[in-house]
Structures are given as structure tokens and as C-alpha cells.
Image 1 (cartoon, rainbow, N blue to C red):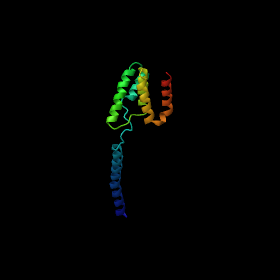
Image 2 (cartoon, rainbow, N blue to C red):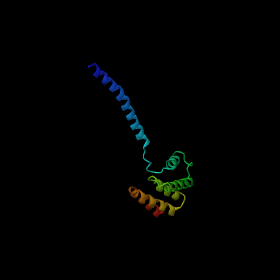
Image 3 (tube, rainbow, N blue to C red):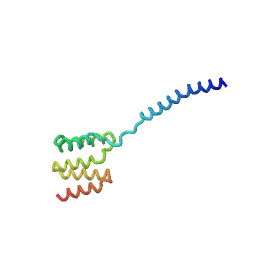
Image 4 (cartoon, one colour):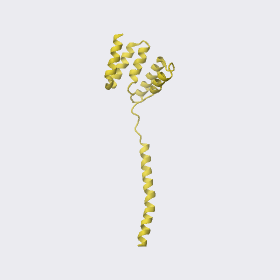
Length: 130
């Protein structure tokens, strides 16, 4: 009986550290395997934030340049831009007085994100009425 208890205690002493090591290694390896981001956000969030919180800091000209660069970089890296980037870029073109480029960007947004169709069609309608 005594030998059996000793064997059980030795088993417990050996199995607990091994189990803890295995669990820790499994958790850490799960963290190491992350999915790549779904979208290339670039400066989009910062530009929108600055536009509303710090008016004048992100003027339309700056936004057109930054967003165009982000779109080119995303394309070069084989990534997509998030919903709203082309619509926002179209709006910046509109503010600058360039309705043809605005229309072009709105159409790209609608093509890439069909769920934005109602919103984009409204923007296109307003653009046409001017």
C-alpha cells in the first residue's frame, strides 16, 4: 500500500509540470499563428478622425493624396481597402469640385461593397442633380 501511494505521488509530481508546460506551449503557439488583417487601413481612420475632431488638419487635398496612396499601397500588397475608403475619397473629390472623379470613386465603392448600394446610389443621385 505504501508503495502504491508513493508511486501515485511521484506520478502527480511528474504529470502536473508536464501538463502545465503542454497547456502553456499550446496557448503560446495559438498566439503566434494570427490571421493577416482583412483590410489595409492605411491612414483612413486617422484622416476621418482628424476631419471631425481637428477641423482643418486633414483638408480635402491632403486626404485625396493620403487615400490615393493607401489604395495604391493596398493594391501593391494584394490587400483590400476597407469599406468607405472609396466613398470618402469620392466625397473629397466632390468637395474639391471634381465631380467626375467623385463619381468614379463612388462607383468603385458600390462595386467592391454591394451592401453600400443604397447609400452610394443616393450620393450619385445628388451628384447628378447638381
